[in-house]
Image 1 (cartoon, one colour):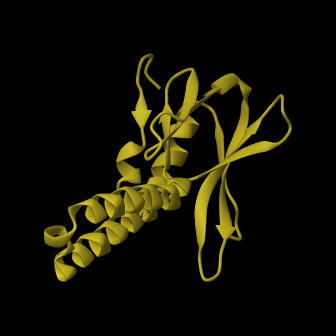
Image 2 (cartoon, rainbow, N blue to C red; image 1 turned 90 degrees about the vertical axis):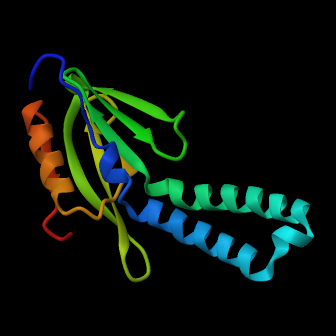
Length: 155
């Protein structure tokens, strides 16, 4: 990896299931407003609904909107919805990173687990992308900074 090269995986987050969930919730909100013509009758209720839908949709979808930024010395984990969340890991403290799956009813959420040298437990961040190249590119970029990326065979 070049000395000052920074690789961000933020663009993959825009095509994730969390963003699609936001889009579906917002589309249903605006369809409801237009169909009932509520915006003409009670503007204060529309504002209240807007605040409710904004809060509700962000809290539902933020869970799998994490993305990575890889620098030559550290890996930064950020959240697309809660932009102030930022966790920094020094590359020399990371043993490996592995892909994980949190199973839910019919599907699941993919994420990564960061295995560190000092605290034995790993930290899990859920991220998903519709693009199939996401996990391949993540593995390639992590290998460039000498971090092993493990994909479990049962995923």
